[in-house]
Length: 166
Image 1 (spheres, one colour):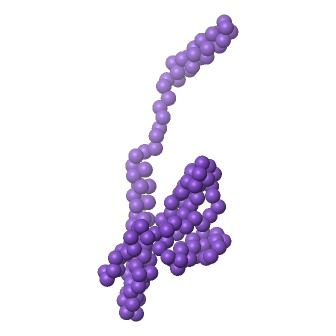
Image 2: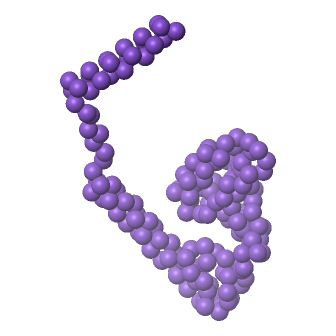
Image 3: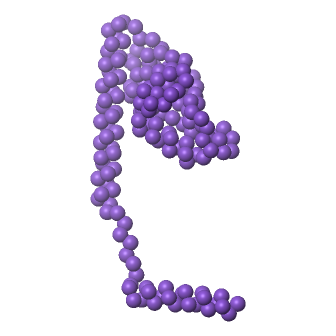
């Protein structure tokens, strides 16, 4: 009991002596201007990607309009790229289905990391779905089978993953 008390008092005295002699440490957190600069760069990259997607979508819709046919399956692809066709509205979210395309993860953190990297590389929207405790799947929304196959091929082309049905 006395030994334990001696160890605690000695440790406290040592820490107090070090702090007294060297002074309180000052923790240099990163400069807020550096953080703001990094944030501005990330926003600019996202805006450039958004402009690129919108340009591609306008070209696709122009091609569809020149062909004289706008179908329901063209509308979700256009909505995915950032705008909807003027003639019809995109499919409602209730008609969307979710497709799990990768092996389940054992933690939500691992699945979320996979999702963030996929979103960065492919530009598609993904969700982490908890199947049961300790089982998390990554899924994307699709309206019909053609859209599902297109998204699988986009993922496969962008990541090099060997996905079935792509």
